[in-house]
Length: 157
Image 1 (cartoon, rainbow, N blue to C red):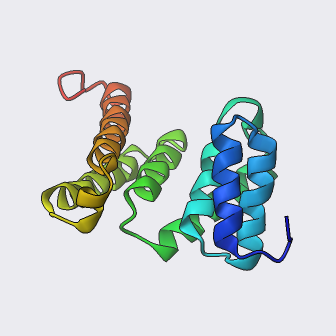
Image 2: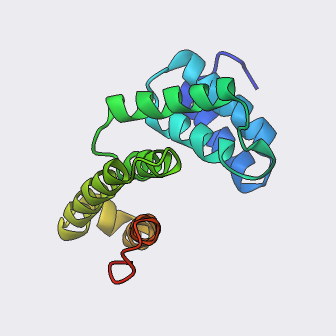
């Protein structure tokens, strides 16, 4: 692979590596995308997701800070990206900032509802678009449930 290939090519390869379970190579290719496009929301979010799973769970403060920087960069680039908002909510939840986490979840649900309500080309062209929205919405409701549980608001959970 040509190392000077456009970032979109690297992003696609990173997604393939991720789907194949090769998270080490996926992280490398997503980082390559960020070398050329530091504000690439998909690459930043992918790094955050991989960094929070399995063998790649970030344990030291330096890596946690780098993860927070990637997440912040994604949020600053696109404040209405529902996946970014979900990741922000999970970050705030882990930090014990439950009100901020709930606010991010509510904002993400509003964005998703606007996607669902719109009759966009994406919904017509991609049969999985609405299903993906529902999966993300389910994940966001799970985070909201965790927030209610921690606050001992069991009826809200």
